[in-house]
Image (cartoon, rainbow, N blue to C red; front, side, top):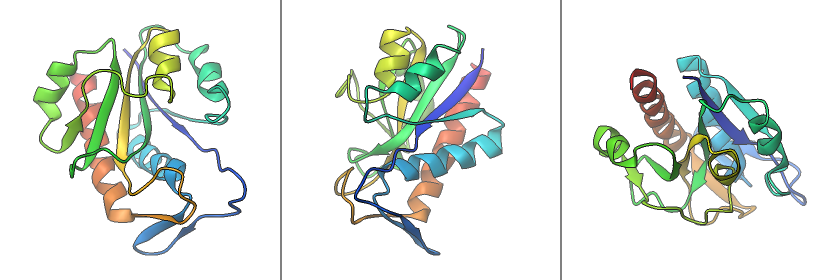
Length: 175
């Protein structure tokens, strides 16, 4: 069984840049918090990552990646969430995996949202619904709004979520 990470990197106008200092990532950081966490987890676990484009346009990047993957691939879509309930990370939109077992193994520091939430609004719809792959959404907590051009997320929050992502990858590799 192969595990891959999928994170989109779209940066929409009118935003010309995002900024990172020693404590925070600032600007339209929605996509890039997921990209940074996916990059770190990929480096630390040797899990391949696909950085997709056009998430805002019919999920064209995820669709192109899905067409190249084996049906047995587990896809972890890495992005941000406003719904982590004070936990280090969020898991939702679980397709074709045992959500109960995931929650039992990882639930202390990860908020699990049961069922499909905004099911057609992220790449899990492509991987899990359209291509029937084992898929889930892994969210890095961000507030107050996904698409706020003046948003901020601490690097510490990204690092905490990355550690949870690495635990998830390790669990899936062993089970």
